[in-house]
Amino acid sequence: MARYAMVIDTRKCVGCSGCVVACKTENNVPDGLCRDWIVEVLKGKSPNLQLEIRSERCNHCENPPCVRCCPTGASYVNEDDFVLVEKSKCTGCKACIASCPYDARYVHPEGYVEKCTFCIHRVEKGLDPSCVEACPTRCMAFGDLEDPKSEVSTLLRSRPYKVLLPQAGTKPKIYYLL
Amino acid sequence: MEEVVITSGRNLPHIDPYLSIWGWEIPVYLFLGGLVAGILFISALFYLQGKSNEMKSAVKITPLLTPVFLGAGLFALFLDLEYKLHVFRFYTAFRLESPMSWGSWTLAAIFPLSVIWSLIHIDSVFPNFRFPLVFVNKLISVFKNYAKVVAWLLIVFSILLGIYTGILLSAFNARPLWNTAILGPLFLVSGLSTGVALSILFSRNEHEKKLLSKIDILAIGIELFLITHMFMGLLASTQVHIDAANLFLGGQYTAVFWIFVVGLGLLFPAMLKLIELRGIKIPVIIPSFLVLAGGLILRFIIVDAGQVSSWIK
Image 1 (tube, each protein chain N blue to C red):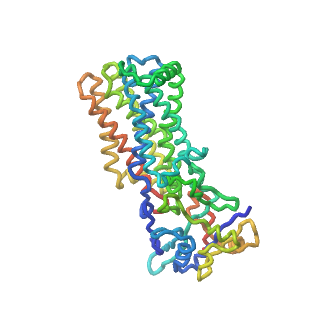
Image 2 (spheres, chains in turn red, yellow):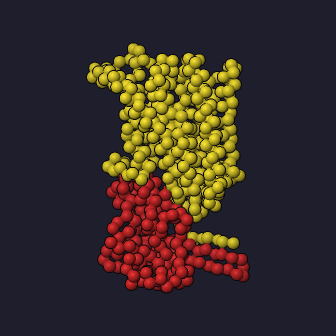
Image 3 (cartoon, each protein chain N blue to C red):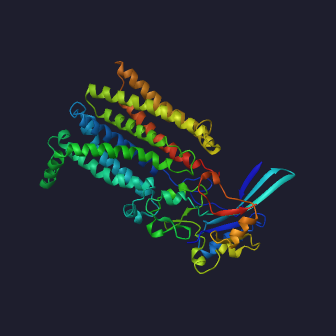
């Protein structure tokens, strides 16, 4: 019973899109679709500008609206707190897509809904998700929040952080170090 | 200033730049579902009050259309599914927290009920009609013995169906426009209003027409009240909810909503009905058509605008 999460350092991320390409390759994401993406937020007024770069994906929320609204149980939370889709149960009704405030899901050309899986197939083998592994600036960390010695727990203790849209009430588990 | 750009390139079909995952199928289904809920509710209500003969159109004639409408609505829902072969999956699970699951089980209950209700009444509308199969006719006479039970079940399931068509949308917190509990009662009353408007069309009885017109005016009044409250609620909430309300208060949906839904779909037909109740003859098809078209457009606009409203865009 782990509680897996991702911590991303917005000060280290340079927006190279390496994580996006790594994910597409690792997960055979069809053309034109993506499970992660890079957002650049420019704030302020010239010359006093601030740039934040974020690698975004499904937040594997602790209160996932996509799982609650799914009529068939295709969207589910596994024992390690991964939010996943069982494609054999998915009807492609798209309720989960409508329910996600982060717009992290899409319909696979075959008809079922897909999104970031935290590369569960790699994590089960003791590896990091492909985006974390591919990052040239090592701006991402993946691990168990229940383990106080894990890299994610240590980072969250040592630095201020934020999550995306906390006001939407979904309790996201991707943390951005400020 | 704050400028947000997705630099890795992201153009997910029907999600970017604005959500458009639900096209015509969902609003058409929501309209037909609401219409059927309205028709079956007043039919069962007047039946239980013992008014089957004086309210013949509402109780007996119009419900004959409900299996057809429900079938068409279900077909529209089916067309919307991206993985049509997995449609049976709706019926291998019941998810307490999912309005769509409630809806699919409600439909599984109300569709056969609407067929039974139609069979019970078919011979009083078409007196010479008999099914060529003897056992069907026998079955109908069995159903007739339980007509009262069926009517009570219809009351329950028609309200569930009518409310669910709105709750389905209002459960989506991610779309601020939909995220108001008013949508449930609004779609319920709108469905009742369209159901009544259709029943008036088939009525040959002045007393029935008048009573149904009065019910429709009342329903329209409640709808206007609920629409006002919907905007009050959204405007008193967070910035994204205020932005959602502003889609109708100066934004891109303003003209179509206030002219076609509130003006031509609610106020104008209510006025025509009031004039008619004072004894001035107005062709019944005009207000009924306007109410039905208004109900359909309302659902198209709400489904569309809800997808435009968002926390991040």
